[in-house]
Amino acid sequence: MASTETPGTGPSATDAHVKDNYELFGLEAGLDALEVGVIGRRPLPQRVGRTLREKTLPPVVAIVVLLAIWQALISFKIVDDPSKLPSPGAVWGEVEDAWLEGKLLGYIWTSVSRGLFGFLLALAIGTPLGLVVARVKFVRAAIGPILSGLQSLPSVAWVPPAVIWLGLEPSMMYAVILLGAVPSIANGLVSGVDQVPPLFLRAGRTMGATGLRGTWHIVLPAALPGYVAGLKQGWAFSWRSLMAAEIIASSPELGVGLGQLLENGRTASSMSMVFLAIFLILFVGIAIDLLIFSPVERWVLRTRGLLVKS
Image (cartoon, rainbow, N blue to C red):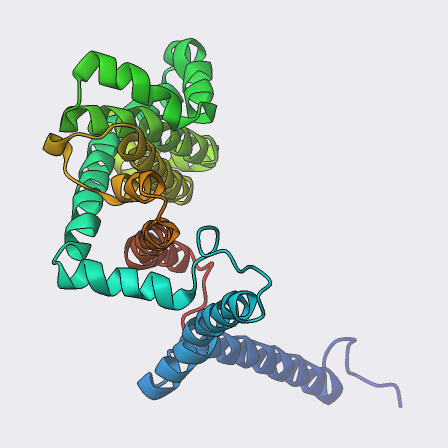
Protein backbone atom coordinates (compact mmCIF):
# COMPACT_ATOMS: atom_id res chain seq x y z
CA MET A 1 0.00 0.00 0.00
CA ALA A 2 1.32 3.43 -0.84
CA SER A 3 2.21 5.67 2.08
CA THR A 4 -0.24 8.45 2.84
CA GLU A 5 2.39 10.57 4.56
CA THR A 6 3.58 13.59 2.64
CA PRO A 7 7.27 14.56 2.64
CA GLY A 8 8.25 16.53 5.69
CA THR A 9 5.51 15.03 7.86
CA GLY A 10 5.17 11.98 10.02
CA PRO A 11 7.07 10.63 12.98
CA SER A 12 10.50 10.90 11.36
CA ALA A 13 10.02 14.59 10.54
CA THR A 14 8.73 15.26 14.02
CA ASP A 15 11.69 13.50 15.57
CA ALA A 16 14.07 15.50 13.40
CA HIS A 17 12.32 18.74 14.35
CA VAL A 18 12.53 17.86 18.04
CA LYS A 19 16.17 16.95 17.63
CA ASP A 20 16.92 20.28 15.92
CA ASN A 21 15.12 22.19 18.66
CA TYR A 22 17.02 20.24 21.29
CA GLU A 23 20.34 21.02 19.63
CA LEU A 24 19.46 24.71 19.38
CA PHE A 25 18.39 24.71 23.00
CA GLY A 26 21.67 23.08 23.99
CA LEU A 27 23.64 25.60 21.97
CA GLU A 28 21.72 28.50 23.50
CA ALA A 29 22.20 27.09 26.97
CA GLY A 30 25.91 26.73 26.31
CA LEU A 31 26.16 30.35 25.19
CA ASP A 32 24.20 31.44 28.26
CA ALA A 33 26.55 29.46 30.47
CA LEU A 34 29.53 30.99 28.72
CA GLU A 35 28.10 34.47 29.19
CA VAL A 36 27.39 33.83 32.85
CA GLY A 37 30.94 32.54 33.31
CA VAL A 38 32.36 35.70 31.78
CA ILE A 39 30.21 38.23 33.56
CA GLY A 40 29.91 36.60 36.98
CA ARG A 41 32.31 37.92 39.61
CA ARG A 42 34.44 35.56 41.62
CA PRO A 43 34.33 35.43 45.41
CA LEU A 44 36.25 38.20 47.17
CA PRO A 45 39.08 35.98 48.51
CA GLN A 46 39.72 34.65 45.02
CA ARG A 47 39.74 38.13 43.53
CA VAL A 48 42.13 39.40 46.21
CA GLY A 49 44.42 36.43 45.70
CA ARG A 50 44.37 36.89 41.95
CA THR A 51 45.15 40.59 42.29
CA LEU A 52 48.08 39.88 44.58
CA ARG A 53 49.35 37.13 42.30
CA GLU A 54 48.92 38.85 38.94
CA LYS A 55 49.25 42.56 39.68
CA THR A 56 51.16 43.00 42.93
CA LEU A 57 53.68 40.19 42.90
CA PRO A 58 55.26 40.87 39.45
CA PRO A 59 56.28 44.49 40.18
CA VAL A 60 57.50 43.52 43.65
CA VAL A 61 59.68 40.79 42.13
CA ALA A 62 60.97 43.24 39.51
CA ILE A 63 61.90 45.77 42.22
CA VAL A 64 63.68 43.10 44.29
CA VAL A 65 65.66 41.94 41.26
CA LEU A 66 66.58 45.52 40.37
CA LEU A 67 67.78 46.22 43.92
CA ALA A 68 69.78 42.98 43.92
CA ILE A 69 71.52 43.90 40.65
CA TRP A 70 72.13 47.42 41.93
CA GLN A 71 73.66 46.17 45.16
CA ALA A 72 75.74 43.60 43.25
CA LEU A 73 77.27 46.37 41.14
CA ILE A 74 78.42 48.02 44.37
CA SER A 75 79.43 44.88 46.29
CA PHE A 76 81.52 43.37 43.49
CA LYS A 77 83.22 46.71 42.77
CA ILE A 78 81.89 46.81 39.23
CA VAL A 79 81.06 50.45 39.96
CA ASP A 80 83.11 51.61 42.92
CA ASP A 81 82.66 55.37 42.60
CA PRO A 82 79.86 56.61 44.93
CA SER A 83 79.78 59.91 43.08
CA LYS A 84 78.49 58.03 40.03
CA LEU A 85 76.39 55.27 41.54
CA PRO A 86 75.45 55.41 45.24
CA SER A 87 74.46 52.27 47.08
CA PRO A 88 70.81 51.53 47.85
CA GLY A 89 71.65 52.08 51.51
CA ALA A 90 72.95 55.60 50.77
CA VAL A 91 69.76 56.50 48.91
CA TRP A 92 67.65 55.08 51.72
CA GLY A 93 69.68 57.18 54.18
CA GLU A 94 68.75 60.23 52.11
CA VAL A 95 65.10 59.23 52.42
CA GLU A 96 65.41 58.90 56.20
CA ASP A 97 67.16 62.28 56.52
CA ALA A 98 64.46 64.03 54.47
CA TRP A 99 61.75 62.33 56.52
CA LEU A 100 63.32 63.19 59.89
CA GLU A 101 63.77 66.79 58.77
CA GLY A 102 60.08 66.92 57.84
CA LYS A 103 60.84 67.79 54.21
CA LEU A 104 60.02 64.60 52.33
CA LEU A 105 56.24 65.05 52.18
CA GLY A 106 56.76 68.75 51.44
CA TYR A 107 58.80 67.92 48.33
CA ILE A 108 56.09 65.56 47.11
CA TRP A 109 53.12 67.78 47.93
CA THR A 110 54.65 70.87 46.32
CA SER A 111 54.97 69.11 42.97
CA VAL A 112 51.80 66.99 43.16
CA SER A 113 49.57 69.96 44.05
CA ARG A 114 51.00 71.98 41.18
CA GLY A 115 50.75 69.10 38.76
CA LEU A 116 47.15 68.20 39.58
CA PHE A 117 45.94 71.79 39.59
CA GLY A 118 47.69 72.50 36.29
CA PHE A 119 46.23 69.31 34.83
CA LEU A 120 42.71 70.32 35.87
CA LEU A 121 43.22 73.69 34.18
CA ALA A 122 44.44 71.91 31.05
CA LEU A 123 41.41 69.63 31.22
CA ALA A 124 39.05 72.60 31.42
CA ILE A 125 40.69 74.21 28.39
CA GLY A 126 41.58 71.16 26.30
CA THR A 127 38.15 69.49 26.41
CA PRO A 128 36.07 72.27 24.80
CA LEU A 129 38.96 73.04 22.46
CA GLY A 130 39.06 69.43 21.31
CA LEU A 131 35.30 69.37 20.75
CA VAL A 132 35.40 72.53 18.66
CA VAL A 133 38.33 71.27 16.59
CA ALA A 134 36.64 67.92 16.06
CA ARG A 135 33.22 69.30 15.09
CA VAL A 136 34.01 72.52 13.18
CA LYS A 137 35.83 71.90 9.92
CA PHE A 138 37.19 75.43 9.55
CA VAL A 139 38.67 75.43 13.06
CA ARG A 140 40.14 72.00 12.48
CA ALA A 141 41.82 73.11 9.27
CA ALA A 142 43.09 76.27 10.97
CA ILE A 143 44.52 75.04 14.28
CA GLY A 144 44.51 71.23 14.01
CA PRO A 145 48.08 71.12 12.62
CA ILE A 146 49.18 73.66 15.23
CA LEU A 147 47.92 71.42 18.05
CA SER A 148 49.79 68.45 16.59
CA GLY A 149 52.95 70.55 16.33
CA LEU A 150 52.62 71.80 19.90
CA GLN A 151 52.18 68.24 21.11
CA SER A 152 55.50 67.23 19.55
CA LEU A 153 57.33 70.27 20.92
CA PRO A 154 59.44 69.44 24.01
CA SER A 155 57.86 71.03 27.06
CA VAL A 156 61.24 72.28 28.30
CA ALA A 157 61.25 74.72 25.36
CA TRP A 158 58.42 76.68 27.02
CA VAL A 159 60.29 77.33 30.27
CA PRO A 160 62.52 80.24 29.13
CA PRO A 161 59.72 82.26 27.49
CA ALA A 162 57.40 81.55 30.43
CA VAL A 163 60.03 82.88 32.85
CA ILE A 164 60.46 86.00 30.72
CA TRP A 165 56.72 86.57 30.37
CA LEU A 166 55.56 85.77 33.90
CA GLY A 167 58.71 85.82 36.04
CA LEU A 168 59.59 83.33 38.76
CA GLU A 169 56.02 82.92 39.95
CA PRO A 170 53.71 79.90 40.31
CA SER A 171 51.79 81.17 37.29
CA MET A 172 54.90 80.42 35.21
CA MET A 173 54.71 76.76 36.27
CA TYR A 174 51.04 76.53 35.33
CA ALA A 175 51.66 78.18 31.96
CA VAL A 176 54.29 75.56 31.12
CA ILE A 177 51.91 72.77 32.20
CA LEU A 178 49.09 74.16 30.06
CA LEU A 179 51.26 74.52 27.00
CA GLY A 180 52.42 70.94 27.41
CA ALA A 181 49.13 69.24 28.34
CA VAL A 182 46.33 71.06 26.46
CA PRO A 183 47.39 69.86 22.97
CA SER A 184 47.50 66.22 24.16
CA ILE A 185 44.05 66.38 25.76
CA ALA A 186 42.53 68.15 22.77
CA ASN A 187 44.09 65.78 20.24
CA GLY A 188 42.98 62.77 22.27
CA LEU A 189 39.40 63.98 22.21
CA VAL A 190 39.61 64.75 18.48
CA SER A 191 40.85 61.22 17.86
CA GLY A 192 38.01 59.80 19.96
CA VAL A 193 35.37 61.84 18.12
CA ASP A 194 36.78 60.76 14.76
CA GLN A 195 36.22 57.13 15.78
CA VAL A 196 32.54 57.59 16.68
CA PRO A 197 30.47 55.47 14.24
CA PRO A 198 28.29 57.69 12.00
CA LEU A 199 25.36 55.42 12.84
CA PHE A 200 25.45 56.68 16.43
CA LEU A 201 25.22 60.27 15.25
CA ARG A 202 22.31 59.53 12.90
CA ALA A 203 20.49 57.62 15.63
CA GLY A 204 21.02 60.52 18.00
CA ARG A 205 19.62 63.02 15.53
CA THR A 206 16.61 60.76 14.94
CA MET A 207 15.90 60.80 18.69
CA GLY A 208 16.33 64.57 18.87
CA ALA A 209 19.85 64.60 20.34
CA THR A 210 21.33 67.50 18.40
CA GLY A 211 23.62 70.39 19.30
CA LEU A 212 24.89 70.38 22.88
CA ARG A 213 22.50 67.57 23.81
CA GLY A 214 23.91 65.35 21.07
CA THR A 215 27.45 66.24 22.10
CA TRP A 216 26.78 65.38 25.74
CA HIS A 217 24.71 62.22 25.24
CA ILE A 218 26.14 60.80 22.00
CA VAL A 219 29.53 62.19 21.02
CA LEU A 220 31.31 62.33 24.37
CA PRO A 221 30.25 58.86 25.61
CA ALA A 222 31.16 57.29 22.27
CA ALA A 223 34.52 59.11 22.18
CA LEU A 224 35.37 58.21 25.78
CA PRO A 225 38.11 55.61 25.06
CA GLY A 226 40.12 58.03 22.94
CA TYR A 227 39.43 60.85 25.39
CA VAL A 228 40.72 58.81 28.34
CA ALA A 229 43.86 57.95 26.37
CA GLY A 230 44.33 61.68 25.73
CA LEU A 231 43.88 62.40 29.44
CA LYS A 232 46.57 59.89 30.37
CA GLN A 233 48.93 61.41 27.85
CA GLY A 234 47.96 64.88 29.02
CA TRP A 235 48.88 63.99 32.61
CA ALA A 236 52.23 62.62 31.42
CA PHE A 237 52.91 65.89 29.61
CA SER A 238 51.76 67.89 32.65
CA TRP A 239 54.12 66.02 34.96
CA ARG A 240 57.09 66.23 32.60
CA SER A 241 56.46 69.91 31.91
CA LEU A 242 56.33 70.65 35.63
CA MET A 243 59.57 68.78 36.31
CA ALA A 244 61.29 70.71 33.52
CA ALA A 245 60.05 74.02 34.94
CA GLU A 246 61.11 73.13 38.49
CA ILE A 247 64.59 72.05 37.35
CA ILE A 248 65.29 75.19 35.35
CA ALA A 249 63.49 77.87 37.38
CA SER A 250 64.30 78.16 41.09
CA SER A 251 63.21 80.80 43.56
CA PRO A 252 62.38 80.91 47.29
CA GLU A 253 58.84 81.95 46.34
CA LEU A 254 58.40 78.75 44.32
CA GLY A 255 59.39 76.39 47.13
CA VAL A 256 61.25 73.12 46.65
CA GLY A 257 59.50 70.50 44.57
CA LEU A 258 60.85 67.26 43.20
CA GLY A 259 62.38 68.91 40.15
CA GLN A 260 64.15 71.46 42.32
CA LEU A 261 65.32 68.64 44.62
CA LEU A 262 66.85 66.94 41.58
CA GLU A 263 68.64 70.15 40.62
CA ASN A 264 69.84 70.68 44.20
CA GLY A 265 71.35 67.20 44.16
CA ARG A 266 73.19 67.98 40.92
CA THR A 267 74.46 71.28 42.27
CA ALA A 268 75.71 69.61 45.45
CA SER A 269 77.16 66.66 43.49
CA SER A 270 75.07 64.35 45.70
CA MET A 271 74.09 61.34 43.63
CA SER A 272 72.10 59.93 46.52
CA MET A 273 69.89 63.05 46.47
CA VAL A 274 69.65 62.85 42.69
CA PHE A 275 68.51 59.23 42.90
CA LEU A 276 66.06 60.11 45.66
CA ALA A 277 64.47 62.78 43.44
CA ILE A 278 64.33 60.42 40.45
CA PHE A 279 62.65 57.68 42.47
CA LEU A 280 60.13 60.10 43.97
CA ILE A 281 59.26 61.50 40.53
CA LEU A 282 58.80 57.96 39.23
CA PHE A 283 56.78 56.95 42.28
CA VAL A 284 54.34 59.85 41.93
CA GLY A 285 53.86 59.22 38.23
CA ILE A 286 53.09 55.54 38.80
CA ALA A 287 50.84 56.25 41.79
CA ILE A 288 48.70 58.78 39.91
CA ASP A 289 48.30 56.38 37.02
CA LEU A 290 47.33 53.45 39.27
CA LEU A 291 45.01 55.42 41.54
CA ILE A 292 43.24 57.61 38.97
CA PHE A 293 43.69 56.74 35.33
CA SER A 294 43.87 52.94 35.42
CA PRO A 295 40.53 52.60 37.29
CA VAL A 296 38.88 55.04 34.87
CA GLU A 297 40.30 53.19 31.89
CA ARG A 298 39.12 49.81 33.26
CA TRP A 299 35.66 51.24 33.88
CA VAL A 300 35.42 52.55 30.32
CA LEU A 301 36.52 49.21 28.88
CA ARG A 302 34.21 47.24 31.18
CA THR A 303 31.14 49.31 30.28
CA ARG A 304 31.82 48.52 26.63
CA GLY A 305 32.24 44.81 27.22
CA LEU A 306 35.95 44.96 26.37
CA LEU A 307 37.19 43.94 29.82
CA VAL A 308 36.18 40.77 31.59
CA LYS A 309 35.02 41.23 35.15
CA SER A 310 36.89 39.07 37.61
